[in-house]
Amino acid sequence: MNVKAIIFDFDGVLANSFQYLYALNKMAMAESGIVLSESQYKNFFNDNVHAAFKDFIKDNNTYKKFSEIRQQNFDKYYLLVKLFSELAEFLNKVKEKYILTIASSGKQERVMDLLAADNLDQYFQIIIANSDHSKEQMINEIMKKLRLFPADLAFISDTCGDLILAKKLGLKAIGVGWGFQSLAKLKSIGPDFIA
Image (cartoon, rainbow, N blue to C red; front, side):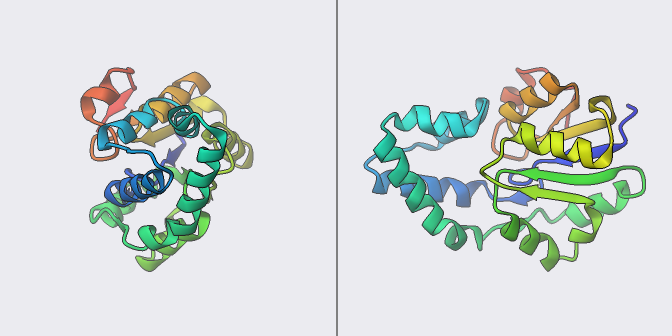
């Protein structure tokens, strides 16, 4: 593998956030009059998660209400999130070999807060966390800033949607089985590697 840089998804890969984000989205859906099961939520990540939310809710006004409730309560739920305990040890092992970056649909502030709390922000050359930009836009921005080509990068994620995108863009797609989607689900889309 001739990879020069790694792009990490954040939630479910570096941060143990599934239960808190599911609780947030379940609450925001309930406040909008919709029941959301855990399996339904996990299936949102089979492809583009933002499109999946819109398709699931269907009605634009209800989607707007859901989004506002979710946004208003995000920090309250996310303050409970912790990084995976093995992260510091892992980053120490890979920091010399690869340029490390993050592309997350979360909030930049929260991602930075979590990493800084454990003094791990120093390991990452680029951190992009923004729910207004697609992962494709983030990946392209990282490639442009690093002056690298798709074949120079690996994207590590816990969701099928991200891995499908990585393959489409020509990046190495690496799935991790401790996040939002099961190993069987991740294997079904044929990533280059599974951890």
